[in-house]
Length: 322
Image (cartoon, rainbow, N blue to C red):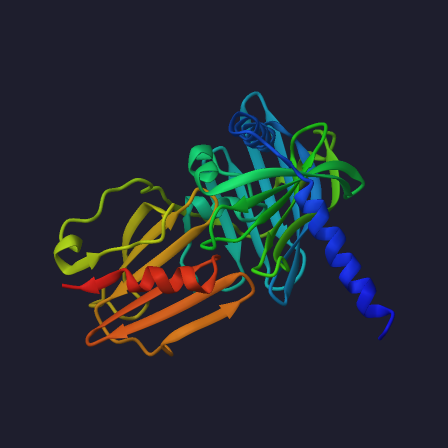
């Protein structure tokens, strides 16, 4: 113990020194980098296997993408856990899930979660984060430049990015918690760049079905919501992206409003339920995901997002019935 403690302290000191010495990118430099990563995600053909770690859950996926003549084709298949498959041709989506009770409705923002892409809303991101270059490492046998998006406040988490030096492709992303511990990771473990793979890999192996994609980004608040709810003091940097009305399965007379807010990098969902649902009030957590339930007479506000607990709590406090 007399030896280990100084070593731990030294390790923390070196980590802090490394972050302090990291190169801070200017806004134009950060914009060019994010745009390069987005361009690579759309224009790079590859065949690989990636790992997704979220809390205690670790899953592996096979992903294939072909980008030719301005057209993208992509297929992603789970290698463990429940059988899932996702196929995309341009803007047409098909999916298979072993749980046939799930409705095949997918948020457009969620279509990139099979392996994440950086946002196109670069200005929103740089309003809430600053980008630093940390160094170089190897991912799946490829050289990568390591960057970190550091939040400018305590309302969101840092995100670390490993970007392929040659192509600009995002090889690995990691969301860090309040103590800078990894809470969610996407990482290629095998990757072959280029279009030299067998085209049969793009064909689904399961009976996939068309997926309804929700595309209501930027929709204004639904008429009547303002008269029902008073919204004040939302967390800064989060902008309303979408509003939909959902009917819980088996409850045709119940309408739940969902409001989706984003800072350009992460999203937070607010559910306004005109009933007192059977959920334990207060805060719950799984990995990077926090859930906060606030119950009032005849109303329930539920907030879900990959942000710190204080942020979802602040969202819930911002909604009050008139």
